[in-house]
Image (cartoon, rainbow, N blue to C red; front, side, top):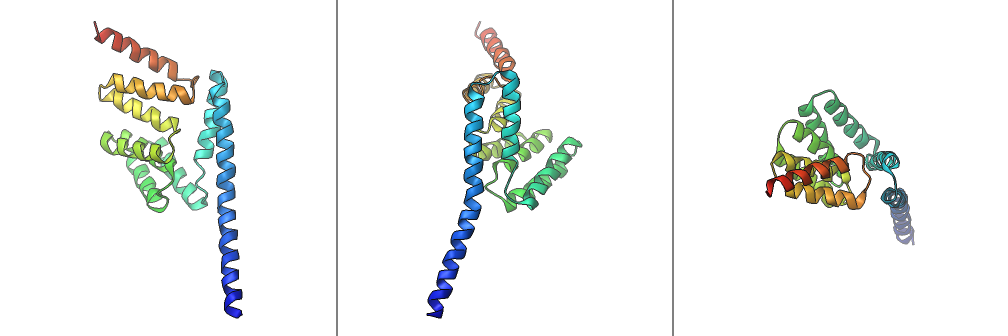
Length: 186
């Protein structure tokens, strides 16, 4: 009887933990879905605001320690220390390998260090974990432009257009690439 009671306690504890951890994720997912729905019909000013709210949601790992590592990495990037940023973000990824924003941020550090291969690897992983990550898609398009692959960059920008049609910097990027491609086909 005591063994059954202990087993039951373990089951209840496991259930409570599962509900405790899944509820914020489900709530975050529902909030993100609503924000993405609004984003599709937003004008440029609203799109910038909504994208900021989405990025804010994406930056929440669910762990204060992991959020601190992300902030330290972002602060190092802002301070012009991409190597330090990469170190913080690598530690973050080691501890939270399913946190898409960590890969996106480390890709930014790698890009600043002109390490395009590692940056592309991190962007790919960010997109595996979060296919709607317009920041990772933008980074991917920018690197494709750096690598003089305008046709592929335009395809990626078109993907962003499906997610956030009025993203503030999207129209000029698409226009520039279309002009570049039209000029190269002459």
